Length: 109
Image: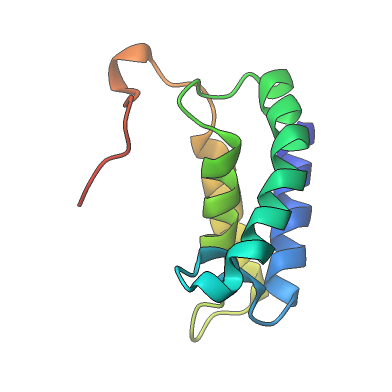
């Protein structure tokens, strides 16, 4: 699926740029312009990929961009293969589930 390929490539990009994943998730106002730049340019393309892929209806472009930023952080004691494994788990979770278990709002811990 083209969406999965895009997610993997984007995750590799974000993971290789020191500090980019943190900046995209930061609440620091110094990073607002960078975050807006990425989201404004990525969201339309990502939206098309989402529609073409037929993934879960409760997943937005912003959800995927946030997830990629979070998944791009290095995990202490694990190599880059572990991050790719987590991305594959995330991609598997995008497949449509029976309607009864899809949340309409994000879960809270």
